[in-house]
Structure formats: C-alpha cells, structure tokens
Length: 188
Length: 278
Image (tube, rainbow over all chains, first blue to last red; front, side, top):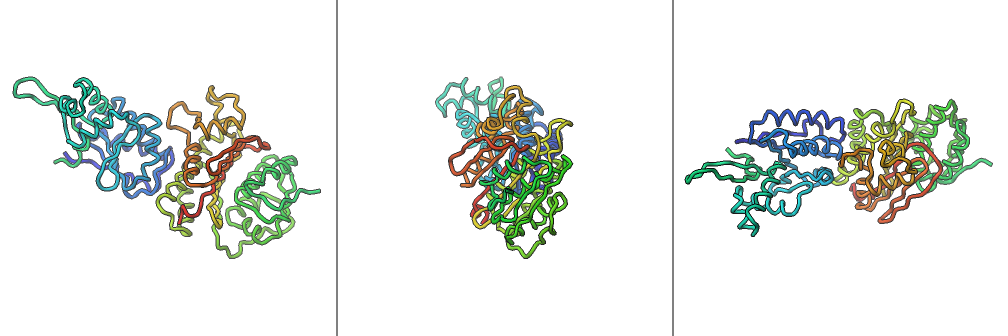
C-alpha cells in the first residue's frame, strides 16, 4: 500500500479564503474518491506559508466532518505539516467542531489536532505505539474492560483515525485487529 | 470656530467623527494644524469622503502644514482614494522620499482577497525579515478580516456598497494594520440570526469579540474577530474595533466596550509590536 499525496502548495503559498477553499475541497473529495478502499491520503502542507482558518475550515474541517459521518468509507486522511504554526488555526477550528485529524508535524512525531477526549487519546497513543492491537490487548494494557476497549476503538474508527482489519483465526471464526492510520503510511 | 485638531489617531479620532459627520455631505475638515495622523484616522477620512460622495456632496479639506502629516496623505494608496474624492484649495501633497511603509488598498470581492494579502505581505517583507509567526499572524488576520467585508458588510441589495479598505503602516515601535468598511456593521450582520436580534452595537461587539458570536449556526464559521483578539492579546498588541455606535478597546489583558458617535460599518485597528516581525 502506498500513500497518495495531496499537495496544497499547488494552490498557492498563502491560502485563506473560504471561496478558494470550496474549490480546493472539491479536488480533495475527488482525490479521496479515487483512492482505493483502505488507503490513506496525505494532505501535504509543505511549501505553504499561511493556512488561514476560513480556508482550512472549508477544506479540512468540512472533510473531516464528512468522513466522521460515514462518507467515503475506507478512505483515510492524514496531514503532514512542516511547522506547528501552520496548523494552529486548523487545530482551533477542529476543536470548535469537536473533530480530530491526525498530523505529522515536522519530521517525526504525530499530533492529534482538534478535539479528542482523553480516553480516546490514550487509546490512540497505544495503537500508534504498537501499530496494531486487539480489544483484549488494549483492555489489558490500560486496565479497562474489553467492552470499554471496543467502544474506544469504534470511536477512533468512526473518526477515521484507525481501521479495523478482520482476519480468520486458526481455531475458527474471526478476530478483529485495529490498526492506526499511521500504519497505512508508506507500507508496501 | 472651525474644529482643527492637532492629533488624529485611534485614541483621538472620536471627536473628529462627531464634528465632521454633523455637516454631511459637505463637512469642512480642517487638518491645517494637524501634527499627528495615523492610518486609522486616514482610513476614516477615506470612508467619510466616500459617504459624502454617495450623498451628493464632497469633503472639503484644508490640508495639513506639517510635512510628516502631508507625507502620510501623499502615500500612494491614501492619495489615490482621497485626492479625487475631496475638494482642496491647494494641490494634493506629493510623495517625498519616505523611509517607512504606508499602503492602503481597496477591498472588494472575495476573489481578489488572496492577491491583496500577497501584495501586502510582499510589501512588508521588503522591510522586515517577517518570521514564520509574524507572517502567519498578519496574513491570517488579513485573510479573515478582508473576506468579512464581502461576506458580512453587505446583506441586501438595498444596502449601500460596503466599500472596504485596508492598509498597513510601519511605525517606530509597531506595525499598524487597519481594515475598515462602511457596511452594515456587526449588530445588523448578527441580527440575521434570531438569537442575536435587537442587540445594540456595543452588545454586538461584546458578543462577537469576547464571546465569539457568529451569524452562522455551524461552529467554526465566523468567530474570526474573537480569534484575532486572542492573538493580539497573546502578542502584546493593541486592538480597537468600532462598529456603528459601539467600540471595543483591547490593550494588554484589559478591554472595554463603550458607546461612540455613530459611523456606519466596522473599522478595525490592530497594532503589533515590531519585534514580532524582526
């Protein structure tokens, strides 16, 4: 699986208006629609100098909202930003809508932008660290019930921060593994 | 006796508005004794001149004698917007050698906003290193305030054109950004939402800038002015917003909302310390 890049810099170095955002959002939705199921679209902010709130609200917050409501199933969105400042306004807008997006800021660490309850941040951090997990493993690691772990997974999957992989068990039946969307990045 | 102020700046322009709007559409604006003029006051003169024109009159201006003040009026954007719109006895001042930046542009349709922001940022970049934080703050504020004009300042066909202008001025210790229009103002813009109907201008300012009220139902839309206020606060700047009969002052951690003399539209003054850009 390879990541597909959606580079915002092709629209300009400073992006700020809602009208511009409407046009770019159409392109972003088309890019997500073209993505095979189970794949990741990386919105790359490299080369941008300004990403103002109205633009990011129209393009990224609206799209995150649609995904969280179930549109475009099996498609995932990740941001890659060269700086913290560039995503500051987006972070505020996401918080106002109680939505979250995953971002890779600078080279290295991930950061959850927007709003995510502490218990989901905790669950996401565990999956991100381990790449994938099951409800049983998370329950044991966090000393919570398996039902609680499943509920957390469902919320993360609904927000498209994680995906569920169903696989057959040798002893019969299926088991579900939860994979962070970070694991979808650049995997062959 | 003609009112002839010595200073016309954000802090002192109220009295002038009161005097000059009384004689619309042909007020006599005596600037002859003026010793200090800032961009905010110059922008109000531009809006006043436009109001006079729309009402079939013309602003009559006695030009300042002091060279420093004349040179601000001679700055390209200000001269272009004022020279043809006012009546003067003598020729409009010519631009001399200037060491500071003053620019003023007209803000129209939303489509043109990015170009305006790009131009102003490039002009500033010629003068300052403009670090990442400074660029992001300034350009972000410009984007939000500029697009507010076509989006909020003009609600129906019956409303007069909002006529928006924006400018930047470089001063010794701060950068002054001014964005202004003579549109419907915050109270009327908010009144399209039943929840905010009937607010006074001062109450609308408090609702928008302090509580983040917006005429849009959906969270995340609107609220730009409150975010700008928070950023100004965080960066030790000063903010003044005037709308109709209300005004909000914000300096350091304190703010005050007060009644002022009526003037249509929304006028915003943001003063940011130079160190943010150096």
